[in-house]
Length: 181
View 1 (cartoon, rainbow, N blue to C red):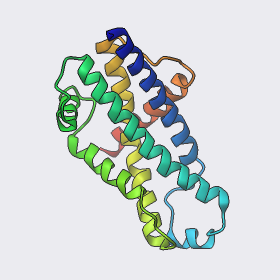
View 2: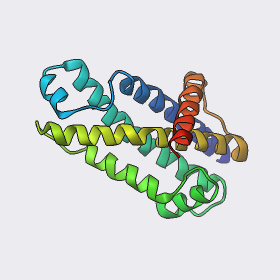
View 3: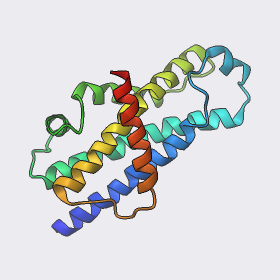
View 4: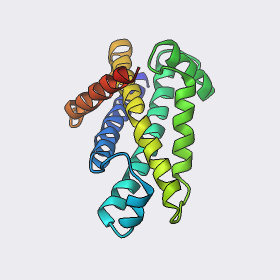
């Protein structure tokens, strides 16, 4: 039973790495920051809007998968996981998260990503620029969480298909976050 739970967390860690890889792939195809004028001028640019859609999808999927993995890891660590706030409090305490408020701010952006923006390009760019700005923090959490699992639970991703890229992306995100503060 515990072996099954450990394997499940290893699979979730692989899913997190895959989400980071594809999110960064979509994100790197765009010149940031976006402007409303640029979006209006490129309103028929299939590649741009496909990348933006992928960013929304991968950002949400990364946060959802990471949340599921954190809840699972908390249980394996013997920590209360009956509410997600307890899970967040635990991972804030062990320095996977800087703060629960950061996670909740990301969650708000994730929820906004689910809404249709129509053609209000100012609203669209505001959203995507905010998502782009917060992605390095989400990458940092993913990297910290992966290290927590390896160091404390002795669990690594079930495959290493994305591990090298994941490490490079999360290391870069940590350097960007340190430069900001």
